[in-house]
Amino acid sequence: MGEPLTILIAARDEARRIETTIEELRRQFPDAEVIVADDGSRDGTADVAEAAGALVLRLPHRGKGQALTLGERVANQGDLLLCDADVRGNLRPLLEGDSDLTVAAFARRQGGGFGIAKHAARRLIGLASGFDAKEPLSGQRRLTQRERA
Image (cartoon, rainbow, N blue to C red; front, side, top):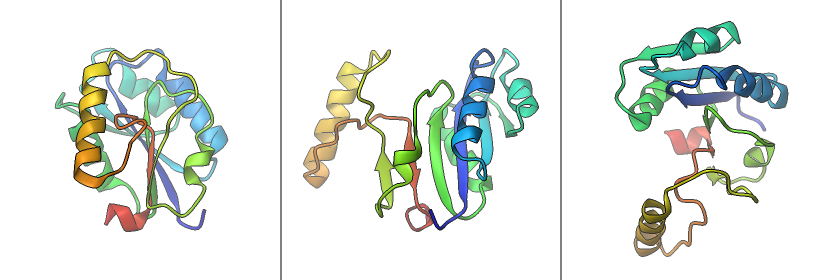
């Protein structure tokens, strides 16, 4: 990993889980900047994330995509690791290789409910690019500085 790393977490009403997530990400990536884009939480998510050492953007509720977009704008130059607030597991493999965009596909699915949306996204990506995306809606992604630009 040659570029500096910023971890960007979009969160809404994740006060019960965000501290553990930040602690685990700091353990895996001790030199990374951690930014939490709080999407209008009503439960103290922003306060918990700040106490855990993250830079917190307190945003009005506009949705995950808008929170990530605004978070990316304040992130330092370098690689960007996007994560869900409740992510668990080893994300270090996302930084391996030389791809400009890497998307996580976990071995064991937990939760979900995105069957129709996931199928539609997979089909649209395939039609547009010919690529068969296993996890088109995964919230865990790594973008290099080149891809960000």
